[in-house]
Amino acid sequence: MTRKHCRKCGAPILRGILHPTGVTRFKPFCSVRCWRMWSLDRATEYAYTKILRGSLGDCWIWSGNRVPGGYGSIVVMGRYYGAHRFVYERLVGKIPSGLDLMHKCDVPYCVNPAHLTPGTRSQNIRDMFSKGRDNRPVGSRCHDSKLKAADVRLIRKMIRRGVTQLSLARKYRVNPTSINKIALNKTWKHLDA
Image 1: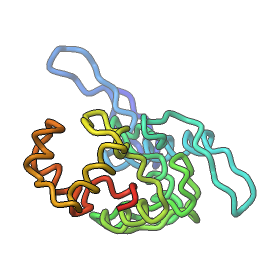
Image 2: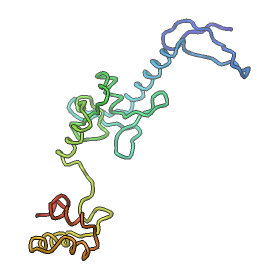
Image 3: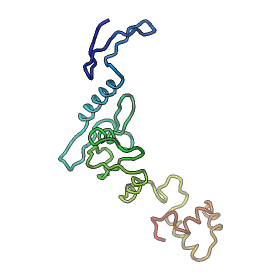
Image 4: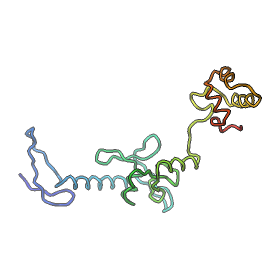
């Protein structure tokens, strides 16, 4: 058996652990803690090579892997992390448990810690709506919509004239609840009432 040193801390370690299969396995670290720290250091070095920095107030663009929503992604110790979360934790500190990171700049692939603030999920969603970033289809652009904008305007006009919601539901072949929500302006809000 030979004596080697840990890749992370340099402490001497006994190598050549005999595996039950009879194959000698080599451990380049003295402990799991050293392996984790070394893995984080390597991931941090990799992350820094994938960040395109501008001036101090500009976005830091993640040029590595991205998920379909546009957010950066990085693998650390076999687990996927959001690149913005990983960079924030390495440069600023731990994100409090249960909190999201909100982008001030509204650029999903930005990893600049100055553009990120911790917040609750509801704060993040309110922020998204207040900035108009909710890109869900509305009205007739919704994939399962049976009505057109002109139909909704006509339905509202007919309701004001006293036509029953049930008869309108039968005429347009929709659920009566849909007609009721149109009448109460709970759906199709983007149209003038």
